[in-house]
Amino acid sequence: VGVPVDSSYVMRVLGHDVEVLVASPELAEALHVQSPRDLNDVPWIMHAGPFGGSQHFVRPDTGETCDVAWSPMVHASNSTMMRLLAMRGLGFLVIPTYAIVEDLAAGRLVRILAPWERRRLVLQAIMPSRPHPRRRTVMLEALVAEARGIAQVVQAALVPP
Image 1 (cartoon, rainbow, N blue to C red):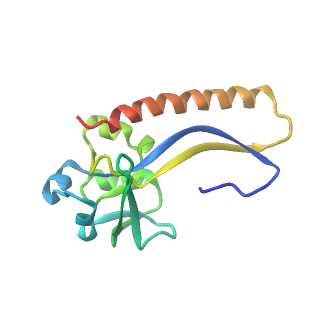
Image 2: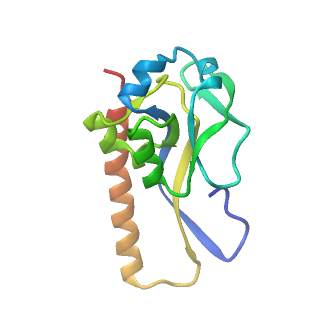
C-alpha cells in the first residue's frame, strides 16, 4: 500500500482502479444520501487497520472535494468480510471497485453518490531487479491482461444507469 520506497526492487504497473462508496440497496434506500455531507452520521464499515478520523472524497468531473467525519460501526480485517457486512446492510463501505464489481452487477451492492470517489489506485507488481525467468514474464503479462479486463468491467459498472 502506498508508494514503494527506493530499493533494489522494480515496479511494474498492472492497471488502475478507484475506491468508491457502496452500500446494500436496502440501506441506501433507507438513508437516502444526497451529498457527501450526509455521510457524517451514517453507519460505516471500516478496515481494522490504522485508519480513521475522516474520509476525503473527490468529484473528478468538477474537482470538488469534501471531508467526511466517520465513526465506524463495524471493523473487519479483510475485504471479503467488509463486503459481506455491507451486503447485510450493516454500513457504508469504501472499497476498490475490482473487489465489488460482481456485487455491483448483481445488485447486491449499489454505488452511492456517483461520481464521487475516495481515491485513485495504481495496481502494481514489485519484484527483485535481478534477471528473471521467463515464467515471471508470462505471469506479469497475464496479470496485466487480467487488470485490463477488470478495468473494462469496472468502467462499465461505474457508469450510472
